[in-house]
Image (cartoon, rainbow, N blue to C red; front, top):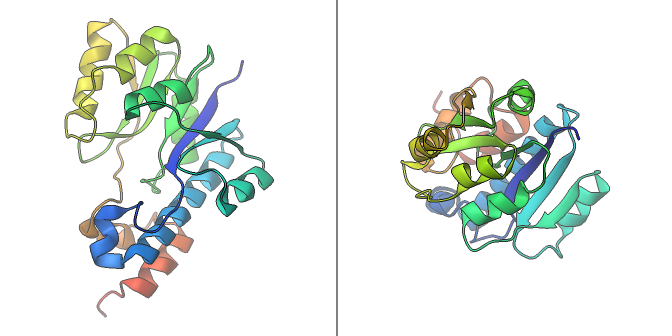
Length: 212
């Protein structure tokens, strides 16, 4: 079976997404940014021509779900008590699966293709905050190493994943580093990044005008 991609995201709901940006943007704009970043992520994934599933956390009976399905994406509910369990469920099966979130929009479709084509059991793309923006796994041993015993939402996620893989004698294929958009300081960084997608830049320029 050919590799596939799964995009992990929350259903856009004001007040429940991009919560660390609410102070800077407000609930409505933070939610709009979240949805825009998800749609940009899916546009990038579409360029890989790999099959894609969108795994959503939240109520699937919303307009976005229908929009995604109308766009040809398979949509499913995330399942699991923590992020590790949700990732393990989303990457289930024997085929290689690349899991990516929607917090990073400055990555290339080529990076996802590299993750999918790698021969190593795990591919991993680090972020500046100690986590990762994408991970590819194939097989039960890779899933156990990647998603079990990880201190989620800490700066030790990436290094613990590498340590688990090493302890299981699993090689890891490194992907380029990137950064998430989680905090107010990240907004300015993204706004100044030449790779910032134009639809995201338009939102940021309207909400956070730069000094002349």
